[in-house]
Amino acid sequence: MWPFVSVIMPAYNAEKYIASAIESILNQTYENFELIIVEDCSVDKTLEVIRRYSADSKLKLTQNERNKGIAYSTNRGMDYAKGKYIALMDDDDIAVRERLELQVNYLEKYTEIDILGGRSNDIDSQGGLIRRGNVPKYNPKYIKATLLFQGMAFRNGTTMMRRYFIDRYHLRYQENCYGMQDLKFFIDSSKVGNISSIGDLLLYYRIHGDNETKRRRQDYKEERKQKYAEFQRESLKASGFELDEGKLSIINKAFAEYDGGCENREDLQLLYEAFCEIMGQARNMAIDYYGELEHYCKLKLSEQVKSLICF
Image (cartoon, rainbow, N blue to C red; front, side):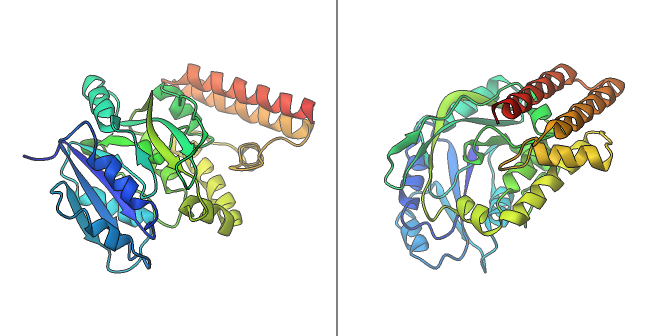
């Protein structure tokens, strides 16, 4: 019997946590799945831990010939996947037991949704709760508007997607993104499909000193800043918006990944003009998410005003 769901788990130097991650998938209430682990030449005992579960027929292990990074490993897993749906899972997180069942049921019911995420809680290295996650946005049109300017509201590790969708549009994770390959993937996907989320808790996201995302944020701060700005510009252009350098620069400044915002009234005025230009072009293009984009722009402008007043 072919698996209905393919769970992709890139693995690298995760000996401390990967057993919990694997077990959280193997113990799912939904049973028709395969777990594809792409081992990326770890220098610790990650591979040894993975092989403890080799007797389980659901687990499929493949190894990169050399360390290639999480984007490459995710793409390799996607290429091996046999399921109708592809779910993503990090090697240090824990999925709730009902995760796959909840997402499969949703996607079977709502066939217009191509990519689905959900709520996650943050935990520490010992599994202790740090904070409960908010319910992410679920309106595909609002998510499309959001991805013109900034990142997603749900963790990449909660993602489940239709295999035919990503194959039809040749969607894959881009390498050399300094840990932001998920943002780029969601931006590209939003141009051709519908992204949504469910309010159910799907994942416990582990925050610890060895976390790959945290390390890249620290080691490549300036590179990430430039890449993030590049993604914003590409996203606006891909959706048909044409802005001059001044307006693009204020968007990059106001919506930087970290420490973004308008510093003075001049910045605020320029951002207002940029939003007006965007809405004028949106009206001319008759985009189907005009109302959601208008709401987003008004909300963000209001937040910038409040930030300046408080400052």
